[in-house]
Length: 219
Image 1: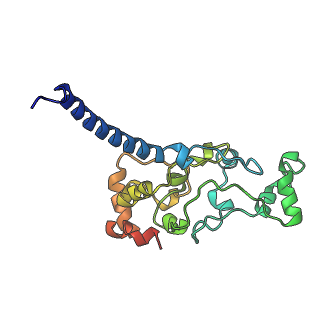
Image 2: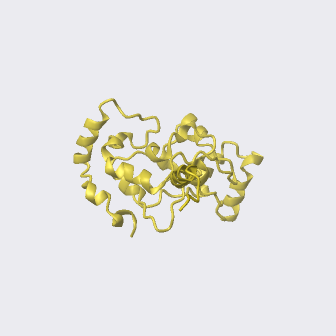
C-alpha cells in the first residue's frame, strides 16, 4: 500500500503537539503573572479621597505617631478610621479657614462622617487582626510601606494569600523590637535573622504549622 501522507507530516505533527504544549504552559504562566500584577492587586495606585490627606506631611514632616489617628490598632482587629474630631484637634487652629478643609469642617458641624476611600481591602472570607500583629512585633511599615513618604496613600504589597503565607512561614524576617513598631523608618539590621529568632521566642510566636493553618486566616 502506498504512503498516503508525506514524510514531513510526521515532523509537522510533532511540532504541532509540542507547540500546543508550549502555548498551554505559556498561557498558564501569563495568567499566573497577570493575577500578581499591580493591575489586579491595585498596588502602587494612589486613591482619590474626599480630602487628599497626606501621610507624608502628617507623619513624615509633622511627626504624628500612627496611634494618634488609628487609635484602636493596638487593641482591636481594625486599626480604626479617625473621627473628624481628631482632625479638628489641630485644624481649629491650623488652616482653620482653608477651603481645602471645608469637607472636614462640614463633617464636624453636621456630625456626618467623611466617607474615605478604602485603600487596603481584604476579602470578607479573610480574617485579619491588627492588634495581634502589633503585639507580636510586626511593624506598620512591614505591611503598609513607608507611609511617611506618601503624599497620597497607596497599597505597596499585593495582599494576596501567597504574600501573607510568605511572612507566616518566615516570621523572624519581619519581627522588630516593640519600641520600633510604629517607627516608619525602621530597617532590618544585618543580623535580622538571628535577632528575629530571639524575638520570635520572646513574643511566643506560634509554630509554623499553626501560622500556616487554614483556620488562622479563614474562620
